[in-house]
Image 1 (cartoon, rainbow, N blue to C red):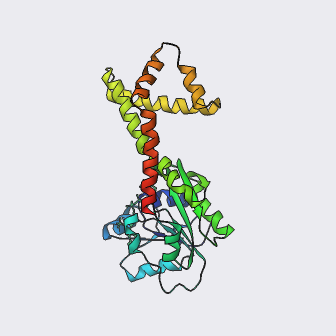
Image 2 (cartoon, helix red, strand yellow):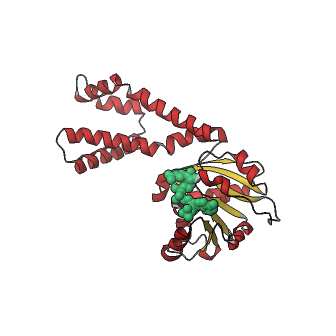
Image 3 (cartoon, rainbow, N blue to C red):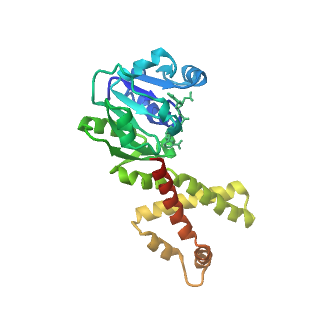
Length: 270
Ligand SMILES: NC(=O)c1ccc[n+]([C@@H]2O[C@H](COP(=O)([O-])OP(=O)(O)OC[C@H]3O[C@@H](n4cnc5c(N)ncnc54)[C@H](OP(=O)(O)O)[C@@H]3O)[C@@H](O)[C@H]2O)c1
């Protein structure tokens, strides 16, 4: 894919992105240069990571070498963004910087990394099991090769959507906050099963299998969600009785508002 890649912050998400590429031999371990903040993480990667990559502590002089890589993945927590600065010694312009930081705009990235063309990426936690969703917005001057490279970073672990940056907040609300909302729904429905006398584990398993089955039915039969709802809602039956309770409690409005709220919160960070 490329000769050398630098990873600034090698935590959970960077690991989930890079390891499959190493597994597929699309990148060679000796060409991966990563930097972490603590001695603990440094030792952990050296001792336990399955590939022998180059790893440095951010405070070390040696870590400056990462700025010589033409391609960088920025994957620190947003609160550590201010601690990262582009090295003065970079001669070449138009390097590539791919950021996965929530709420850091392309404008902020371009100001902080003037010798880089920037891509802003939003990905979600299921990327850690190769089932993620990734939204990408491109900064100015990014080349076609840089776009292709960025997409290759994510395509083995997620479905990719290219957007204007304006859509990234709502994309983040749906796809990054979404897993927590779904987890809450699973938990609440399982508690319903528990209340009806089912053991907790069984109840949770039934809910998850039901959700997987429902999604595959919608997809395979190409149904709209209303069609599916009508399919299982018979006059005076159990399902309409359940739906009536949800409508009374304004669940639909609560879910809509939850997504708008997450999106607004994301906009505040930009
Ligand atoms: N977690 C999610 O669900 C999720 C989903 C999508 C996107 N994201 C985004 O992905 C980014 C990373 O999240 P994560 O969950 O992978 O975080 P994480 O596991 O905490 O990893 C952050 C990494 O950054 C390193 N770091 C901290 N300060 C640094 C510095 N000054 N220089 C170099 N490295 C530094 C940390 O090193 P130490 O371990 O030594 O401190 C650690 O390796 C975040 O910006 C987040 O917005 C997260």
